Length: 452
Image 1: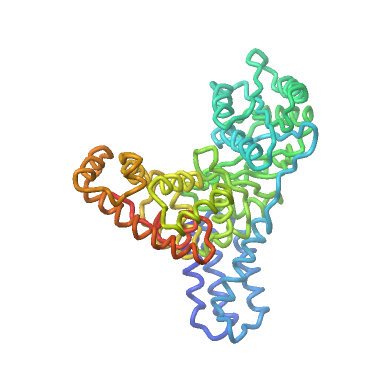
Image 2: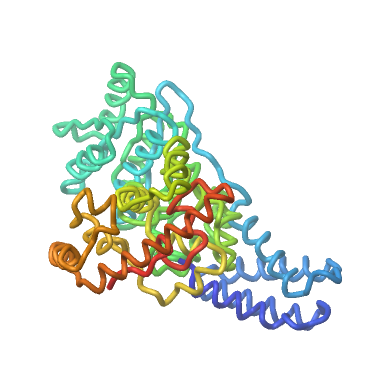
């Protein structure tokens, strides 16, 4: 995400690094590079020009302190302007009403139905809500089936009326159902089209009038670039949505939509989709995203993800085991499962300052731990608790059972021993995050080089 843009910004900043002062000439050339970087990221030219001029004007209006170099000051100004450009701060969902109603809108293929379920999971797990998904797409084949499958996957209720072809009546019936069944949030999945058309706009306007949502969300594919912005403008003019969900932010997107949709529509980005899994949904924080774009990492989000998976009681229990040097492969396997729930390993490591660029050409997929898990699961319970008992024949059996080699088993045992020493040393400084805490201090998942 934003790799090319990050490179172009880095190139722009190099123009002023080494300069003693900021002048009209050197900041002018840097501003041009910033503008080109944004245009290449598919930001509208006039928007990119306004942004570059704001950076230039701020830089010229500030004196450079002796302790701050011009290049450092420019990075700081650009980071602040990027955050402001994308909305300044995170905007929460507006959940009001009994039940509260969220109306989902967007084109077909944008990921609307999938993200309807993702929002439901977010509300259930993060806010303690009891959502009801409503199938109001009566046109797309299997749309109702898809929503039912997704609802079951995220553990929420779903309301369907397969014989009813009027989505307005379905939405009304869903509200009555929610009131009588204790659902405090109703999320209405509406029909999309391959392009903006009057029929679709009129229908969703009627649904909105009928259910009076406290929150109307526009779901858009970030990879469509400026088309995403134009589509958002068309929807906003007709139904005045409250916020945006940008999907496929984990793909090879140039980032123009994320950078300019707030500027062009005046509506905040509230969430970004970062993968196919239901958990792959992040609240959008403009300040943190600006830091990621400029290669500063995003430690706050990394810590939040760790806190979601590691409760205080388990962390204290783990810390005691580490201090007693009784941390074993059973504990490690449990830690691996928790880290996997935090999201894509490469994306997590990229949140560590300086790691994003270093890992750009390193292939770390979602199954980065699978060989380690296979080796551990091929051990007996006794072997997991006492790795020192592993002799040649036992290692051979484990290698055969896990589809790996004895060399890989030996490598894991060696690195596990090194990791135990590191964790014991870290426990003395108050670390209570186990393997997740180590991730922010190492270059690979769990501080280990993955077998294979």
